[in-house]
Length: 301
Image (cartoon, rainbow, N blue to C red; front, side):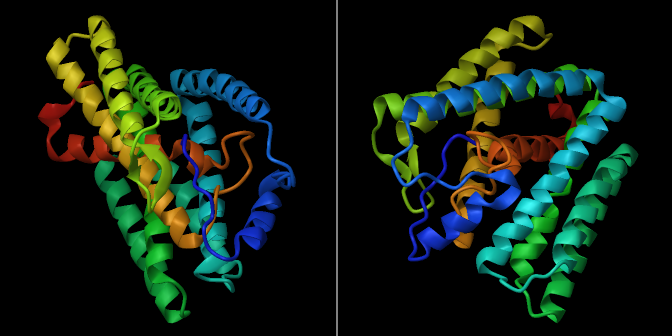
């Protein structure tokens, strides 16, 4: 995720203090951060994560399952933490443990196919929602969180293992999502313009949204030369990927607003948490998996 929003409620100082101590995050300095240093940290972290992610996808098997499971577990911990900061300050260990278990097992369930993964995630979300109601907790927050930290990670493994040339396809999708993130950041910062969703993501502009779509479509047209699909087919596909990726970014921004946090954690230097970094990709692989199950003719792999 490229854009993070400032906390706007009256508890900004306390929330930022809590956020700074989670998973190794350093406390925010009292003076404004050096923008060049911050950008350099983001760049270095990105240059490390991108090749690592590509390598894991190409390797598949144990390495893919292990890396995806680690991301899913961190995502579950981050979501539990966000809920406990505002919606459920007495969450205890039951719900975090339940989300971690649900997220981790989803990687194994994915090997049995879409139907099993979808049913597993939905039932898991339903059971956690019921438990939340019985324990007078936030059923919507925990129910959605259960679905959010299980199905996307299982879908990632499912695409890699079940689709024809799934590894290559995932790398293409990751490249398009990264193009959207980078182009949105550069276009938004470079040209400014009216805000796209000021209530949910004040840093996101129409210029960034449209610039991201344009650059992603151009990237898709270029990549189509290495596939058996037409320019129009792959260009439309790239445009849809950009829209879904930005929706995933915006959706997570909305949830963070509800919980009153800036970043989901500080586990990734310069990028925030796993959910901050993977929100766009999580939305994309989820939509791709559902569309493939419902309309197989649309598959590009």
